[in-house]
Image (cartoon, rainbow, N blue to C red; front, side, top):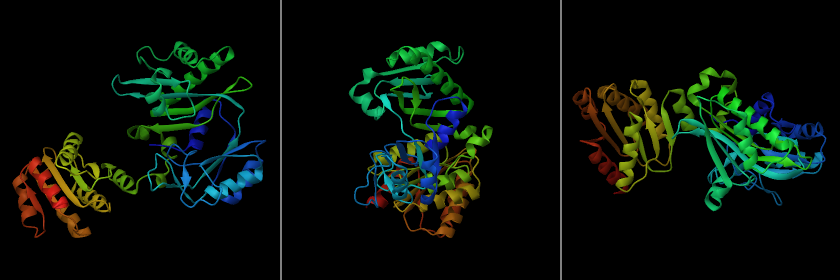
Length: 397
């Protein structure tokens, strides 16, 4: 689960991490009042969407002279005008894709007198099953570009959970960033507090870009991205309350309400599978035979007829889907339940694209009989290879 920058900064303040003073704006007429509550003489006006690259992004409905989702204003009136130009418009960045995201919130904060921009992040290292700390002297730019062009400028190390965090880790970051004097102490305290926040709130990622050294020698976090483990949200109702459903893919949002594991992709063949491993294999074999999967969808081992019906409806709601492959291996999941769900879904939403069904396992013959006697135009498959070839042929011709 992701949250907005202004929400992330509220959490940072609660953990004693230095950030700029700021105000959230939901309506353009509120912007002037919000900006006037801060001293200036510089205000930063930021579009709030769940995507990076806002500063270099562009608005689809831009007026002459407008540019970027992060702008510097030198008066209260200019800050209010920038907010007016952004609210309700669609911002396109390298991370949103061509469709972009609508800006429903603006964050106005005090400007900062910056001397250096640095990079700092905490994330889960899947290989070591530890928290990894990543830092670089090249802040304010894409860390992917830094990794590609100058990887030697990135330091990455993990924290042993048995020993836990120690002041040594903070000093290691400070030295890697070339900090001196009191900045070393400041950096150590920042990293320590970020680590505590990361663990306390069950985060997947906490990225600070940039972490800045100001001209007065003090350090501050200018931007923050946070992602949380969705499986841990039952422990954190305060974090769950920050969820902005308008920022999520409607299909993924609908799937989450039925405990379906769904991720939208860019292909043309919808997939409904039980089991994450089998779902990945299904996607791979579709690509092998010359097509692209439109989604990852695992209905789980204990799916009901209702769940299967909802899964089918989610797949068919994607206008890019030109065909559907149902691939079920019935262990815990019974093939007859899948068949009943597919039939119910087809009758409810209709079938406008080719549908290939491959069933194997518990009650497989019963499931095939249900499909066979349904009167629907469903293509039966004997195995995964056969199913993939048939759906690709049906879509590609």
